[in-house]
Image (cartoon, rainbow, N blue to C red; front, side, top):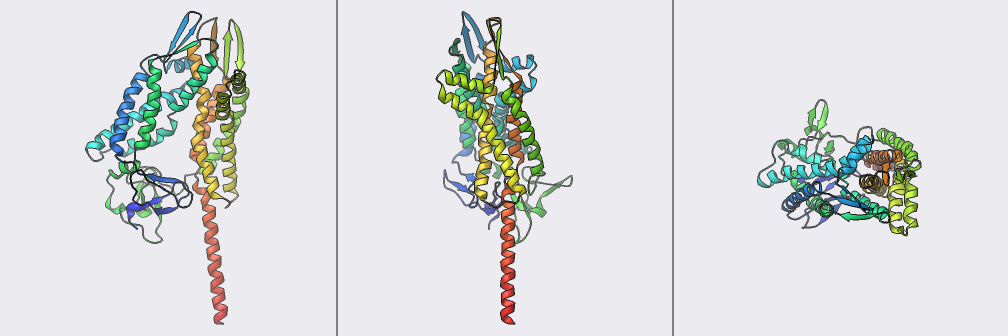
Length: 433
């Protein structure tokens, strides 16, 4: 088997062949059906063009007014960072930091890093420092949530439609186009092509010998004999991208349990405490997440109410239940339906970020409704706990190693094979006797 064709599934740990693919083709794991690789034609050119377009749109989206709020002759204009600044001034610095990182900093850094990596790579081989920068691109990808922010804008406009007139400004249109451009850039980027430009030491290129221990990098997916991995401060490191190498994520179960318990503790106050406080003509009114859903239902917006309920109430609870189930099943050594359990894990990775929609709604409402004694909206303590639930559950999903689901199954098969071999040998011995 050629070394370049080796790939280890990051979901179940199975070592297998990655065959040559036609343009647009994809290969999936033969055991757990996880997508291993998709061949994107003309990947570098398309990704670079979309990245440049994304940077231009990003600058426009952050340089001009975003939305305007017109109420009884008063007009309030807001930019993307207005709500973040107000949250910080009101003492909600934790909330403002989360919103700033996920809606502005992470997408912006991702675009800049892609440009720094792809532009020189288009002209020359990979230079020093390139692997580390490209690793950061993969790290930032789950935390860029502009699409979720767009859903928050939609919910905010619906909530304020009866109160005042909402006027879309220049930045909003740039922001909408930017969402699609960034998604297209991520879909166009073939990571395998990028990593293939990074030179690898000759010693790493050899195929593993039968029975030899191997290591697979979880970042660049390089498969190598364990003896040929770099050793830095007593730890194994990838010779291509520099990431630490582990057979399984260190202390995966312990870290996941700790994060899940912390998220459960924060879940109750997130749903019981007010997420916003609306002061109209001197009369304050506090709203929780559920009261916001009821408001949308009362105004006939049941599709939007359903989306908010699922994203803000059902999804966080579902993630916690799934993670607890996966942790318990691994602790008990279960070998039942590992494919289904792997799919459940992938579901937690996909849907978790959409729970941030209510936090973005709070940020937009705080930025728009600033009319003094007439009407003012402030963030409540429930918003901080809810943001904590979303962030902690995302970290919990990242800390869990899905390959642990398959370890007990592999051990069971090995034990069954050993028992079968022993029975065969015993029968042969008796027959000889």
